[in-house]
Amino acid sequence: MSERITELKNEYFSTGTLSELPSQLFIAGEWCDAAGGETLEVSDPSSGKSFAAVSAAQAEDVARAVEAADAAFHSHWRDLKPSARGMILARTADLLEQQADFFSVVEALDSGKPLGEAQGDIGSSVQALRYYAGCADKIQGDSFPLGAETFSFSCLEPVGVTAHIIPWNYPLATTIRGVAPALAAGCTAVVKPAEQTPLSALLLAGLFKEAGLPNGVYNVIPGTGQGAGAPLVDHPKVRHTTFTGSVGTGSKVMQAAAAHISSVTLELGGKSPIVALADCDLEKTAEGVLWAIFYNAGQICSAGSRLVVERSIHRALVDKIVEKTAQLQAGHALQNPNYGAINSREQLEKIEGFVERARARGISIACGGHRLKVADSESGWFYAPTIMDDVPMQDELVQEEIFGPVLTVQVVDDPEQAIVAANCTQFALAAGIYTQNVTQALRLSRAIDAGQVTVNDYWAGGIEVPFGGNRQSGIGREKGLEALRNYSTTKAITLAF
Ligand code: NAI
Ligand code: MG
Image (cartoon, rainbow, N blue to C red):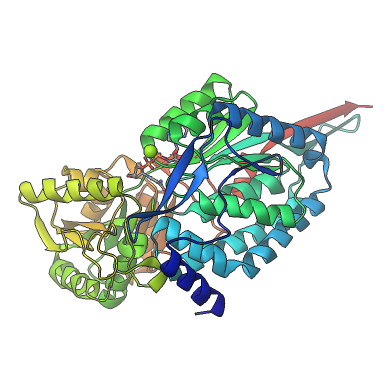
């Protein structure tokens, strides 16, 4: 652990807060209070206590941010040499890397995730900034054959002001995942972080400013969904909205965008299956499933929340995963445990509700099924790693997203039944397959409806790989080169000689 982290930990544990935390909105390159003077409390899920407050934007502030983004778009950003845009993103990546310790501590405090996981998020955010920095000058069009007398070509133009509505589970990583390709493509951005976790998107504003990003290109307006999110997506000057969150809110965002004919990327819920075939490597599969569901205490849209397992290995595999849950030790995020808190009291109650209803229906609980009391963090929001065994297909544990550390096990008799079980929900985000048989792996990869499938390593992937879902899991793709298409529109130019 670096000296800087030790200093920050000492400061936090002795004062209950940190100096240097942002507390205002960031609009047109300036820090400012919300016009209405309202604020949001920022809580540390590991202790259940508030440790900061930030201004809460309302419609008036949102409108100012969108106007600033629109002015910056037209006055220079869209016309800046793309390689210069890339340089600013690359400088921001360097600054984030230099300040990774501070960002990691703030992210761990704000979200409740273990410090080591927060460090991982900052690392992948640096990579995402570098990836799109390199893309900025490679967004290019095509030419079309119309014969000797005509010349026809296309160029990709930035769509304009983009809105980014961010959830609380990956506050900085989700912000950068959307904003980096948007800025690379020549768009400007207004970010509405989740009300639970506004700090890191605000801190990023300071880095962008230091890296030389022109005023108005990146704006941050923390606030509630109703107070700040809705007026943002309703604003007619917003040309694209990138949203990550619940299905219900995603549907509202899409309706708001429809009112002024603008596009959306929706990254919504999941109930992603992990299929374990009879020939899988049991040890590797158990380890894979453990982290697929218990990393970030299961608060991941693409968590592997259903284990679809062949009957012949069901008992042995579930026993092995249960055994491995003993390694998971909860603690205050800054003590860097390997198992963190639930982000909010509401989310904790939601998780508990699912498990208690299942218990009342007589579903077997292989482990967990209760809140956790953690030494030194008695009032923190922790829930035990939980495994619900042999659950029927129509049960709400199979059908509904819980968004917490609850694995639902479905037992099947053969790979055909595994495909049916894997596809039995309204969601289609991610899927994992564990088998030694390449033919089966490819056959199942085709047959399972999902935006991404991984084989023998659930979290395999990176910023290079497109990410998103089908059906209720959303529309469009983020990450990879595909994300650039969300922020670009094609202009075809044809000249007759
Ligand atoms: P939510 O979808 O309501 O919130 C996500 C973001 O949308 C937040 O920034 C929120 O302020 C904003 N928002 C809310 N209403 C809005 C509106 N009308 N217009 C524009 N923006 C709006 O999700 P919430 O309430 O935080 O969590 C509820 C459930 O959603 C969770 O239990 C979980 O199942 C799921 N969820 C899924 C996530 C994912 O990664 N796909 C992330 C967070 C939550
Ligand atoms: Mg909400």
